[in-house]
Image (cartoon, rainbow, N blue to C red; front, top):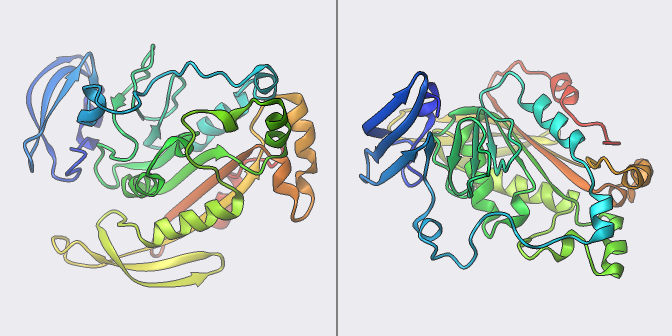
Length: 320
């Protein structure tokens, strides 16, 4: 774990209270071993082999009903063909996180964030890897600029808590990628009895409209960095501007504008899937021809000069 990013870490229960480093072993710029204690609740967390462990007790000690990690489940032969390749997804992730202090939540083996978090330890952990639950992030509020999470939200029992955590730790932008439950290919695979709809750890499915509604409600009820309760909200050209009652310790309200954008896209490298996605330009029914959902939450302080052109530049091509 690079020493410069240790200050981003916090106890999952009291993320902004700060951590005391009781003992540590440093190798150059990397912290290889340390004992971290929460200043608020005195909870202790180990950092071993450069990896901080903030896993909940139920997972760490094997009490959870399901243990995280690679699953024996397989999608089926045709489904594997239709899901082959992820180079478009990886290029989009790298472009979205370029030049920003970022967090990749649910990173798996292929991570691109400054900080990379997952609930299980990959065989080859990426740089600045952190063991943690996606629903209780061990990061201080506003500690990163951009948060990326792909194909995680459909696995979680508490997606609302997950999204609120992503919003809490991000200063500028949250990006989510997940399955489009309305994709026409899933109906074809259902006939064959295979595909992602049979994945034993998928708990939720999302369409463009349902995801937009869900993210909007999550934002309205969320405690953004330094804020707790929403006191005023109004629609503003598809987005919202909200004033929040600030943390009494900070002394003044926090005002942030936010915008939710959800669109159906195809991020598969599979030629048949991409050919079908050409029909995505059709009005109203277009989303059913795209396999994935790309969701972006823009978080802006009042008076931000960031222009919509910047948002358009970061939007994925619909044919991806």
